[in-house]
Image (tube, rainbow, N blue to C red; front, side):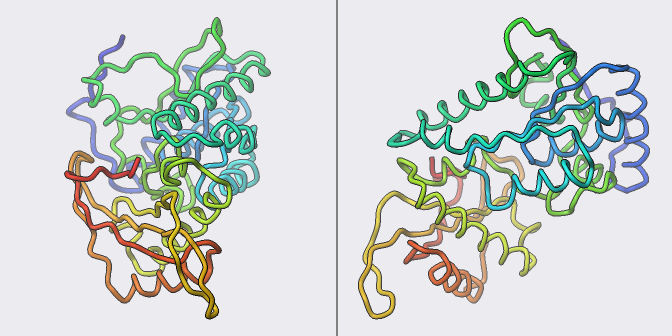
Length: 326
């Protein structure tokens, strides 16, 4: 395994000019490394994989094959944005797999968080394997590895693959942003012309909304969660909190409480808002959201999202709480 160390002389990428210089250098390196070979990338729509995809498209065009698997647990509009940006605007060689029913059927009745994670992760690899097996001439696998990933593995980056490939398929890795920190990746992404909202998208767990739809996932509660989360993100965007808060989201528990609507009692779920800041992800403090904004978000969620009749705010720091509920 290769020991990877960022050179001390490497200048931090903080400006569009430095980002453009990095892009030009990487395009030359990628073309030399790949030649006329084909490259496969699991494109999640997150910051790192999106920047790698845009960079590779600029370098080798249709030689890159992007596979986006929609497991039905994405945030509202995310898969659609991947299709619009990469499939239409950048004319990428994009394979879109709508596997929502496949994943949700497997998750039916599963309440244990670890079982949910294993099902989602394992099925993603199976879907990605199936798509990779249909392709011919793939010699390279691109990954959105960034420098913090390497630091967390003590400087050693094993030749693994995020999505998985069929056994026996030989490949070489392409990791063009492996020496960059997250803030540098974002500067490069903007220089590549990616949408600001995609470049500054907040962290999102691999199992997606699966670990925020608490307990056994039901389609109606998952839909309510997705809509409530979209309202929270919309209001944070409008009120200047989107780039101030490290991570913010809604979780919906698997129990109901009595509420009142149109003069009648009815049962509904609670939407729990969590907004935290951190510098190292090991500890986190709770963001102080203005009460007027909380009231407005509550008004919108309880009136616009079917099935939600309460909005709660989680004020627990890490520790003692974790970032996610599951």
